Length: 348
Ligand code: FDP
Image (cartoon, rainbow, N blue to C red; front, side):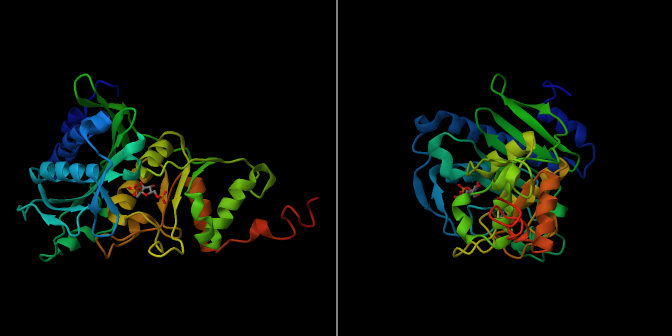
């Protein structure tokens, strides 16, 4: 494996059967659209006011110029591939491509992290490829109401200092870097492995007062460092661009949390199950990491709403497992016991 294996060659080798070829075609289409989006982002303000607010999507989130451009580019490209329905975070409902018998359905978050467009911070395109459901009976939504464990492929394109496509087709998680010289994505890291342990966490700490006790307790313990129950110091990172956090965690480990909280509309957090949670969970698991809602595996959640939000915790497997254990036992007070806390009986 080296930089000379292109994404095209990888997909040719992988898609030897008529079952797998459509998925490979979809990945090629997304990679093609990603190159165009990458070119726009690389131009920054020279490409126009990409960060300008142009409206709101059906969920009330602000839409930026680049959200709409990326959405249009991806939909145009996907319509020419073997896809029956496309669901997009930017659209109220899935759209039919006019090919009802095509074998696949694709969900996209055209531009994740769009609050960062004007700040020159990494953003990304996320995608999830599902088989067309035989049980949908004409309902476009039902194709997407399959648990994430049914995904045939998933990934993201990160637009940062370099552009990279991170892909899983259920056989490991692989990174293909865009070579600006010849415009090809090339395999630069095969079979990424997320370290099982970590000392780095990512959460928007400004929401501390809104979290439940389990999350607050977990973060308290991390912050107490060597003096606390965990007995080790932690580092913190928050980019506010999930793709960028996911990429960092794939490269060096860590844990990302966007839990539900008590703000209006945030009961199930901020991230969308179909467009964000499922593809990231698939990539993480294929890289040896984990992804949970708190109590359950993300890939087992059966969606019931096309824009359903989900509390999302992912990353290094031992850290995620610890937090899942805390949720199971509702552990929220352990280290805060007056016996063991900083001002308790056993501390001076
Ligand atoms: P954005 O709305 O800018 O697209 O997907 C939602 C998301 O970004 C994530 O990429 C990011 O992690 C999160 O929202 C940021 O949330 P906060 O505004 O709470 O920091």
